[in-house]
Length: 428
Image (cartoon, rainbow, N blue to C red; front, top):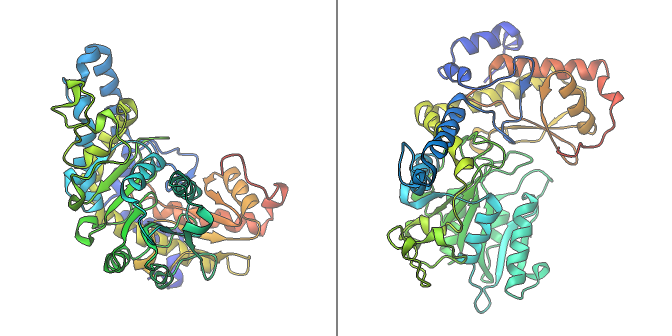
């Protein structure tokens, strides 16, 4: 896409920024003018709208007290459903198939507790060997709760190259002994985007339920969960959706499963009209709302109101197009400017297989990340040797991409990384 030599100039990056149809959204964020933020796939920046929606909810608490549950601009009693309606288009679902609740791992526990029903020879759960550890911990603990040994009943599909997982290998693992498949939509290290539609069809053809962890894709990649027939999914909102550190998560349940009793019941999963009857008989909501457990974390949910309103305006199709263009431009710059310096691009090149970040491998990755931070670039390190760089469509510029690669070039040319130890910080 970007091959001519003039593409690798600062002037060309500025030309691309001048043509950017999403440029106005950058002014909506608190962007530090003294640094380049390339870590939005780990924690998104604060937007002014998210800040304002948080302040409005705090003001409702201040002025209305307990009446904030049913009164005001955003009554707390219905906030999870309100946010679900704004989230649903991002995952290709109906509003009642989504609920904003819990955290990524809590929601995974809830969904596995609901959909994992070992019976006869079907006792195994299929996951992948490159998944984020928290998902694996949750699956191991769920198996133990059933009295099953994770070493035997958790099947982790191996990578052929240490970077990616082949869909053919996942499908080969879908044997008659498998009850459930849990996979990431995008692998958090390499940025590989899995073919969810194909994997769902193959699982269902074998009588297996399948769910996806959307943490590294929701808000950056288009999804069609309902159309594909995905059974369930879960995700965080603090990466591409900019809801704030530890922000409330989200989950999706296909409507074909409505009426199923959630594995972990709690009072906020009750039907709204029954919740305050205070009976000791659980009457679950008729939709995805049934999968809520405890009282919603209202203050944590509040920033998502403003953030999701912005996504509705920006349109995910445009966001995805810019994201792909920016990561393609970054890869071209890396190949042009950093050749011979020991870097390997470890993410897929194909737009159909790439998520929202560039995965740059180097033997000195940890210390290079520290040098980048000192130079005013905020990257993300992932063991053992990965520098993740994520230009975010809402607030990053092509100039940011160009400057990031130039600073990397200076760090390598002048060996500025050598003054740091090649070990990760406490929070990588």
